[in-house]
Amino acid sequence: METLETVTSRPLLLLIAGAKGAIGSTLALASLIMRDQPDVIAPYLTTADLWGESNASATVHVAGWDVSQRQMAEALALHRVVPESLWQGMQGALDQVLVAPAPDGGLSVSDQVHQLLRDINTFQEAYPEAQPVMINLLPACSECCLSTEDNAEAMTGAQFPDLAYARAAIRAGIPVVNFTPNDLGDPALAATAAEKGIPLVGRDGKTGQTYFKVVLASALKARQLRVDGWYSLNILGNADGRNLMDPECARGKLANKTELLDDVLGYRVGEAYGESAHKVHIDYYPPRGDAKEAWDVIDIKGLFGLPMSIRVNLQGRDSILAAPMALDLARWVVLLQAVGRGGEVPELGFYFKKPEGEQPATTYEDQLRDLKSLEALCRQKLAV
Ligand SMILES: NC(=O)c1ccc[n+]([C@@H]2O[C@H](COP(=O)([O-])OP(=O)(O)OC[C@H]3O[C@@H](n4cnc5c(N)ncnc54)[C@H](O)[C@@H]3O)[C@@H](O)[C@H]2O)c1
Image 1 (cartoon, rainbow, N blue to C red):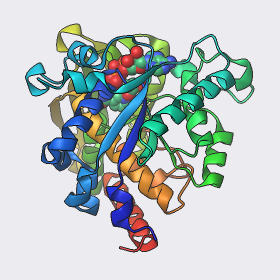
Image 2 (tube, protein in one colour):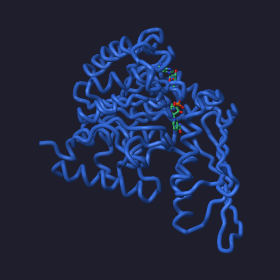
Image 3 (cartoon, rainbow, N blue to C red):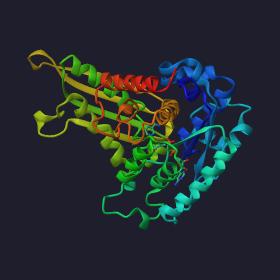
């Protein structure tokens, strides 16, 4: 009989779509380091606290796909996320990570799925003892959304690359974490995943500025301080930032970063002005690379409607914030699959800007409470 211990200590196999990107290569390095020095990585996992430090050190294998022909070590050096001094001597191990070429963009979605299923089979043969999880780290692009009239079979994979990865995973019985802002746009897939007991969770990892926005907005709400306006600016110089300079690709991301504030507060910020006073801007600024900086100007009102203001300046590191969260989510979905909790999981809203599923919690307090309730469900269903 499965226990919490047997499920959480089983090796993981992360199947990463976009494996050589900034987050994917950071995750590959973290997974390698974890094998010999779990204490370097485990303290930064939220799941270590949830179900015991000792289980946070299970072996994590990485495989996946990318359009890039670069070796993994070269990709890691290129993204400049982790100083080379921290992975000296690991180049050989990094370059052994199994990364298959992404399916040709000219293929139909279903032909892409067939190719991906073959690759998944190969990866599973290489790590037969490991529990696989698909992690979507493809570039952001809102063009990927399917409208209800679109027929996915008639589209080429290039128009909608995310869908093929998610479909292949669900067909193979593998849970999916959609870390991107891309809407998989296929309600039938979520329904199938729910029926088969396979978690399909997303979307848009809540890593930096938006995480602190939810925390602060929840605190202001609890204190009955009225938010009159919120101005957020981000500069970043990685490939994600460059990609987000394309308004089409930024649309989904900006919507995810913007809409949640009103949801947390329960009113429309800017109501008094007849238009939204919550502004979010993202600017590509090459000198910063992955070291993203964000500023928030928060105008609030207290007793007698008198104005006050708060400034927040986050000097973050995009992929350093994101990689452990992707690993946490992989650990969660494996556990949820073991207890038969498939489909969308809105209780994982703590991790996402745009949590999929019915009525996800909006405030920080409620999102933490939801995580506790998921943990309780897992403990209850799996003998400890
Ligand atoms: N870093 C964060 O804090 C954060 C937060 C939320 C969401 N995200 C999202 O996570 C995703 C990944 O971010 P990143 O910084 O690693 O991006 P990135 O651009 O560095 O990596 C994307 C990778 O995908 C590869 N790729 C492109 N098309 C592909 C295809 N069809 N098949 C396989 N691989 C393909 C690219 O070659 C690249 O290596 C983005 O969608 C980003 O918006 C990041």
